[in-house]
Length: 260
Ligand SMILES: Nc1ncnc2c1ncn2[C@@H]1O[C@H](COP(=O)(O)OP(=O)(O)OP(=O)(O)O)[C@@H](O)[C@H]1O
Ligand SMILES: [Mg+2]
Image 1 (cartoon, rainbow, N blue to C red):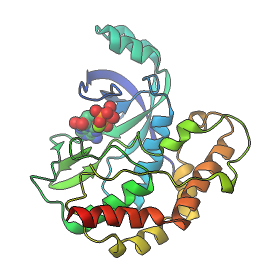
Image 2 (image 1 turned 180 degrees about the vertical axis):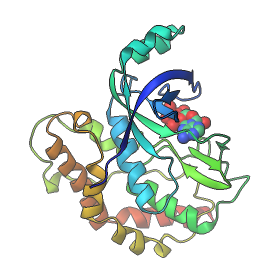
Image 3 (image 1 turned 90 degrees about the horizontal axis):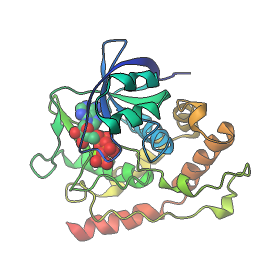
Image 4 (image 1 turned 90 degrees about the vertical axis):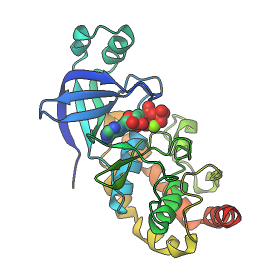
């Protein structure tokens, strides 16, 4: 079974001011530089869970994603930090945090300026609807251009249903599953995508329970607050339901076709 690489933070370099979750550039003991999403940031660890599940699933479906690592952080790192806001963030983030390999020289990918191609656009639109990623609008596509290719970042807002899970140990009964609304009208890929029927069957077949198990196993147990095995099962249930009830693909196709 694969696992995420683990590194230890040695230096806080600089904040990414534009990021709502206060991500920071951090150097680690392997001398690598990582964009770190801190466990102590306001939104809590569910953001980090979504980054792993969605990012690693995307990678396995062929998208480019910076390597995701687990970053051990000693809150004492805060001592060297003059900025009080950053100090507080580091103090609240002792333990495991999430890091994305920093892509040096990358810049924000703008699909209006550079067409990523219909095939890529169609796949990404389908994928974001599957995982309920509401954070890929044309205003903020959360894609980086690096070595002439689009790389996907920032999946913390996907899988938003986990915020409404009750803490109880009972699995979500199948009959309680909902068709989650997904508003694609602002999606960055809507104008570029082709017919979703071109990718739907292939991508849906690739997201097997085994693949999901593999991806869910990458999430540290301590981020699955409650019973980790039970929570992994709930994520599985969501995907099973969403893949067997694909009315959302028809809605997505209607939105896309209306736009073209
Ligand atoms: N792996 C990376 N390599 C280089 N730059 C990155 C990387 N990941 C993120 N960035 C930069 O940091 C910014 C913030 O990252 P990200 O979007 O993941 O954080 P966020 O707090 O969720 O942001 P927001 O809520 O504003 O979208 C990105 O817009 C990008 O410019
Ligand atoms: Mg972002």
